[in-house]
Length: 387
Image: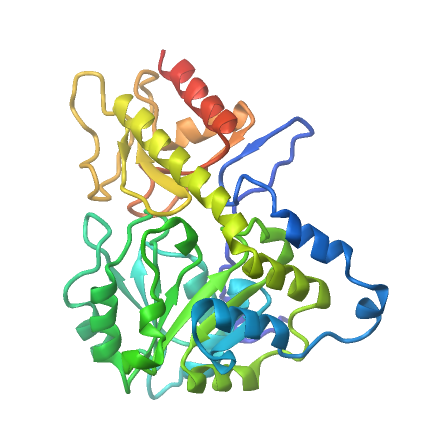
């Protein structure tokens, strides 16, 4: 007989982007990693870590990192929490602020938009809390009545990734301010800023004490902008009361000595990391232009990836309304490959991009922005396919 709880037995686990299995060189553009290496001060900090630091337990609350992050973001250290990747922050927020489901009520769970980061409902299911899902507009913008629907459902945490994944769309700050204001006193607004380093706007004004808001939590990660996905270090920025609540439920010594010094160096020298952000943005604009010229539909992105729809049928009849999420099935016609067959073709040529077998996304591909050489290889492979 199974020993796990019923909700865990029924749980469908999160599916991460596939890892290369080939011994050949693979161009990996499916998990939104930064194509450039970490900055040298990070590597120096890692090399300088004395053996004594590994023998002893690290700072339980990563206090040095918290002080640096507070200075960088112009908040106080008690507004920062360090976590084992951004995913631990998500798990903490759900377990701390959401009620497990009961036979009497399903209120008190999380609110999400669809599509979004597919880990959110997985974490909710593991905590056995309810999920309220609201579809986005055709252009991936938020519906006007989002906050009203979330309040009516009684959610305790609304999770919004901004820039949005998988589209790369950016939610205006004034819209998020309005949502937070309407949720204040009733629910936490968690804004997942995993891709913020590639965007023109961040949400820091919402966590400044002058904002008057006490229910906004920002998720930050060292994985994307700082090229440290293998380090597994993230952090949250929010009002001191939110941080204190999560700090009580945080694992003891949840971040290790090596990751703490590396993350601190990354933030300390963020002006060097910003060079890679500029190169990614430049290549994002280039890929948008090149694919648009080839008749692909490219959704506007402020992230380090682009969401795209392959070209329409040669006779000009589009099998999918651009931006509506309406799916297409072009199987059987070699001249009009589907998103899935293009994904498979690129994979056969040692290029990994992301295909989502989900409602509203089956006619689309998400392509992480790579180096100029990697992007050249993608374009050349697509040109060969469509020739």
